[in-house]
Image (cartoon, rainbow, N blue to C red; front, side, top):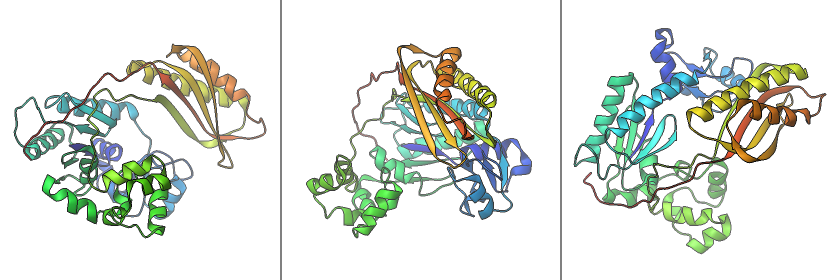
Length: 349
């Protein structure tokens, strides 16, 4: 099953501040600049969504309330939700703070119905956090992921094995998990609008058109996905970034901002017990152009001082005459490796 919290960041803010309940809320950014990290359902009605520039969001929803993110609170709530998952299964693959795949084929409660498990987990999440979640239940990750979005918010959807063929045939291409907006547009231009349309192409044809992704498209339009739920899913990087209300034009201000970001990245790495070898700096200028610079070490680190030293050195190389509106640091090449093996059993729905 795939369990996804409903408007997670925004819902936490509405839970903790009664004055925000029932109102359009955007987490992150400000009315003038920045990027929306999450939007409440009241804001989504106006077309406000995550990753949207705050200025556009404010135009779409004049009454939009911007609140600063509280990632420490979100992580704390996420840990409580994860603890609920572990009461049912150890096979949990987190995708982010607010969603995860669960394999409940063999569950700790000896429950024989996946539908009942999902319903009970969602109720426990609400009872223990005051937040709602939605769930998708099926035979594999792809179908479960798509299904979890059907009855949002605060709902769940079962796609029984006997329903998969018809479900994927009628599914719009833009709703296929793993097919982005650009690829969906390209497929639509080819006259491919549903899974049934995509099935008309052979696997070699799709591979020729889309590379190795074509093989994935060939399988998912038929509802086929043999990827196991991996509880030790590898995290590729740890990072943090900030968009500033006023452009940073002075080097001292840029270095101070970079130091604070390095402190946050180091803190996140230590919390997750990660260390890495490659430090990347992200710079977005006042004209919205974005550049990245990286440097690799010959050893692993999670030390703030070391991360900052390299980030500051990389910062020195950017054109002095250009002001910065965003700074970011990420650390990759982490010392984490996969150790799991997967398999599939059977369970009544």
